[in-house]
Amino acid sequence: MIPPDSAVERMGVHGIDADSEEFHGQPFTRTFVYGYDAGRLIFLEPMIALDYLRSRPDATLPVKTPAAYTNPGYYLGHYRVAYAPATDEYRVELLDLRPFPASPAKTL
Image 1 (cartoon, rainbow, N blue to C red):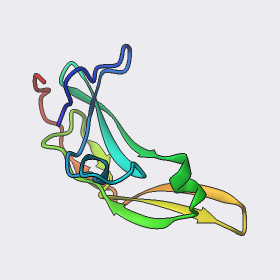
Image 2 (image 1 turned 135 degrees about the vertical axis):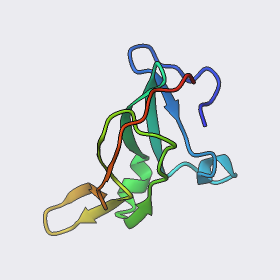
Image 3 (image 1 turned 180 degrees about the horizontal axis):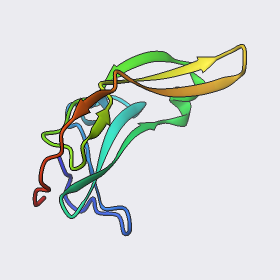
């Protein structure tokens, strides 16, 4: 869904998953954001809270497929958020890339 007044200058609007935990009484930990400009999908973004990263997670999470992709290409089905103690790194991995065709832009 596109929340009212969610447009950010020079970034477009942010589409969100209304089923995410933060919209159902849970604290924000992580979510997946879809960015649109003039009805065209222009970015996909895992958004992750710093406190969640500090918990040193290892979670693989599904990404809902939008109704259409503006450009043809490979798009993810899951993403992983993990802490690697051997290198003291946090990793966000895009997984299960699959090809999708382009669809015309829609008015939002």
